[in-house]
Image (cartoon, rainbow, N blue to C red; front, side, top):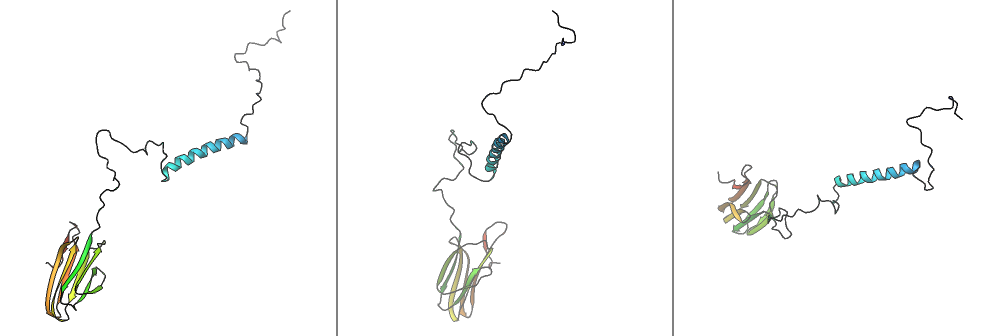
Length: 183
């Protein structure tokens, strides 16, 4: 028996495969898959953003691991107990006859004191410091301005209502303190 020509089908190069049987395990369907994908993407975004937000790097991050040289090179990182820079100071000193009126301080201030006096303060970001000591009717007085213990300016006055005046300023180019009274 032969098959009639109208029932014969020409060979199809890519015949459709028969439908596969569905497994009994449930796969990812609809909104459930989207939820899983969203969680995975959100986790990736958080981990990338977390590295750029200034938070501490993860312990497994090789960029966060300290670099160690096995060639005897010293580390540039400060070590605990390293030498701390000592704060710079200015000292206002006045000696001589008691009773002289004293004014001292950085530019813009007028602290007051009496002879004898020695006051040490931390240097500020100020370019000018001064001290004046005015005698009250007679005697003698000497003022000194020191930076880190080194005398930068010194002045003496005697008799009447004379004034000993010490002034220092910081040279903007060299960064060194100079006696402003020494013209």
